[in-house]
Length: 608
Image (cartoon, rainbow, N blue to C red; front, side, top):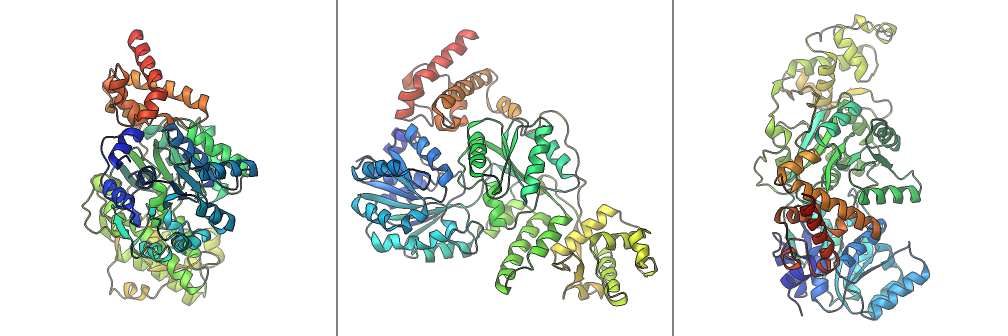
């Protein structure tokens, strides 16, 4: 029987484990249960794949990602691993073939959707097979009030009841301390060993900018920093997804929409294009992304405020899985706060409390004057983080200012409208009153006679909107659910009486980025990370890889990751033996793709 280190080298082509992997793998290989919290890109999959290859029998992987199972299996087969899956996309004949292969002992890994385990015939099939380990991927889906809840995950505790001798490993990249505890309880893993590998993704640059013209801001961001890069743009509504995708295409940027309103065939086609093509952007709702294993996603952009920090971390974590620099960019504004405050008033009392907690944490990240990474890690229970130096607030520290008087003016306007006129209005009318604008609506309601009319001339329209946004964020203003009218809160009175100081974050004007290649642009990265002589070699290898991937009908990263091609281009191996020493080149890939790589390198040498 091979050791974990031997499997790592022979199958996956790596000489050493990443931090935390070896201890987890050896624990599971020895038959122990494990609950693993590890950041996206940290190598979670090896933590169950290697035990499945070391222990006798087949590893059963429970995953909610039906649409990605084929790609997951293709990637393993490219490594020489005998992998298969059972899900609802297969016909009866195909399912019977996989079942027969399983019972014949000819599978190393079998992927199942959680709903399959509710089917008694599936459980009986597994009882007939020799199972090495059960892996429960995306384990946060068991958390009932989480952002990716899957009801079928609640039944997974039966695995231990029916297979008590088989080790289980549950894994997730997204879990607060409360979610961690819920996963442990619901999956019956309280007695398991828990591994928390941290949540930091140091290669991701977090940046949140004041929203002014979001389409233009996004276009500037893409053109100046990520021209030609693959990435994901998240929007809250299906309509916004369609509009932004159309806008990008009109401006010469390859983009496709993805949301639940599209038919299944279109969604599958767009997802397949994203995985297989270089430089394609997917504009999507949160329906897209979980389990996407594309390593070279260079950015994730948000044009709307996510509902929670869990969702934000999960979504931004899809960038930079290869460990190279990536950007998490968001445009955030007043309407985001108003909309989410309204949504947080829906549902029963318990639901409203949860929604308010999620929103408060999200807003705190947006409005902080400190390191965003420190705040993000603190939310997930990692309390000892130091300022990262790689987020916008570290690189350009924002100023805070005493906004007590402007806050009093806003609150006083809302108060006078309610007391003197028995009226409630939204942000626009309140700001118009403060600025002394004699609009038709102001004159219609006689608001020019209010004592607060025109008292806000010291600030401009955008600045007043920023003040209102931060008052909403701090809970000093609230929004009524029906029409978005502003109302006071229990905390407003202390500000009005001068008993509470209000510190506000000074918004930096959203500046247009300088033209030309930015630090994140593909061409810029290649030039920086490769010696000049290696850059054309890398591009030639990418072209070879694209041709092979197209011929085999698999994503390019299934052949080799960019990081592996960069190392090949830099080292210039002249033999299979030298190529075998490159990270990411295991035995099967060496035999399958090695001659093609060497031929490409030889052709490049001859051409030069």
